[in-house]
Length: 187
Image (cartoon, rainbow, N blue to C red; front, side, top):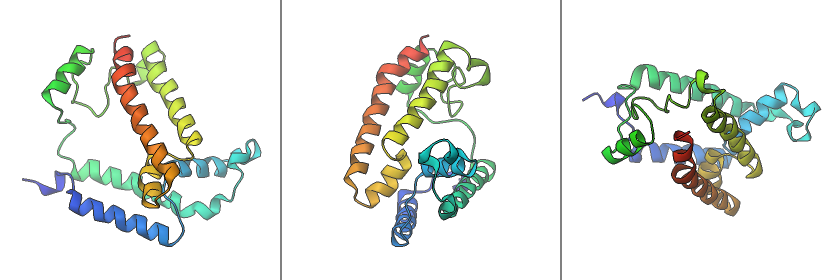
């Protein structure tokens, strides 16, 4: 068995995440990927047009270095630590997805019937990619952070708004999964 291609067990990954979060809390930083997007927009001059982006992005340079590490770590993981691209799904889930019109669920990380360039200008693609992307961006801005920021950083800091946001994220995810996704896949 190749242990490098297996997911890290909770007793290794959990304490590592806790150590990183404790370190960030002790130095007064918060983690969240939407913060990086805000910093990138500020670097490119969006602060001239929108006050939300008018801030000292240089104070967030550590966050930008984190994004570089995240991309590099993802590349290392995919290139050297991944056993393959097949995703192991429950048989009932595979059958349900096939009944919704997905030809080969589990063969890719995302369903290619929706997420490919050729589908961008179809009704299904516009709803899933464009409208979905807009709603994710709007939701992250409205909630004051993204899922990683609230669920990892905010909950670690025992913030009630983060708990409320995480509950909202889960309710939204379940609603889309069970009510919206079947409709989109049947378009």
